[in-house]
Length: 102
Image (cartoon, rainbow, N blue to C red; front, side, top):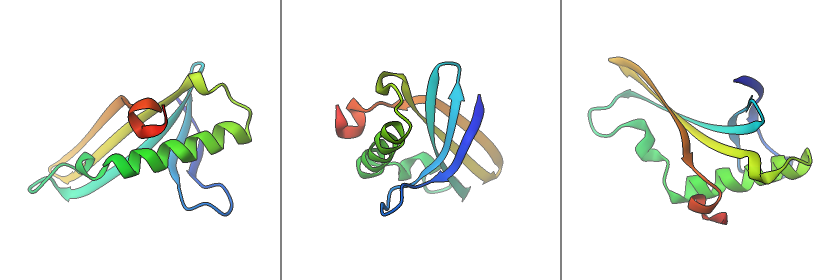
């Protein structure tokens, strides 16, 4: 996987994509969430329907801007906990359809 953009935002829009990467033929939009510890809830709990919808909208803006095939879009989630330190990568965490745009 190769990162091609970080903190991407289309001018005039509020939605932001933390990381945009290429993984073979797929364009991967990565949401990164972190917490000091997971005592009350893991970081991925903060990715609710509204966040998935906003990320999907931003991804479609990105795809349209660069004339990308929307069937090759993927949404991943990276959760980081600092105490004790752990990183979890969830490929295909959601899709345009489950994100509310399908």
